[in-house]
Length: 122
Image (cartoon, rainbow, N blue to C red; front, side, top):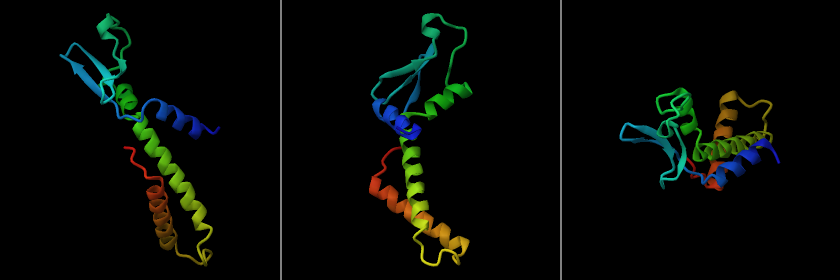
C-alpha cells in the first residue's frame, strides 16, 4: 500500500466530510462534521487552558482545512495528473511539440481523468 493509498483509506474512513469550527457561545470551540460529529475541541470545556487549538490559531486552521474531503480531492488531482503525464508519452510528434501544446494536452487529459473518476470531493 502506498502512502497515498493509506491517506485515501483514512480519509474515506473518516467520512469524507468538510470540517468546520463551531463557537459554543464564546466559551469554547470545537471542530465538527456537517452532521455535528465532534472531530476535536479546543480543550477549554474541560478546564485545559494550557496548550489549546482554536480557530484563530494557524494550526487549528490547518487542521480544519486538511479535512477528509479536501484530502480526497487532492488525491484525485494527483491521480489525474499522473494519468495526464502518462498520456503525454502518447502525443504524436512529442519531441517537436511546443510547450504550450504539451500543457494543453496535459490539461485535457487531466479533465478527462477527473471526469472519469467523478471527483465530487471539495
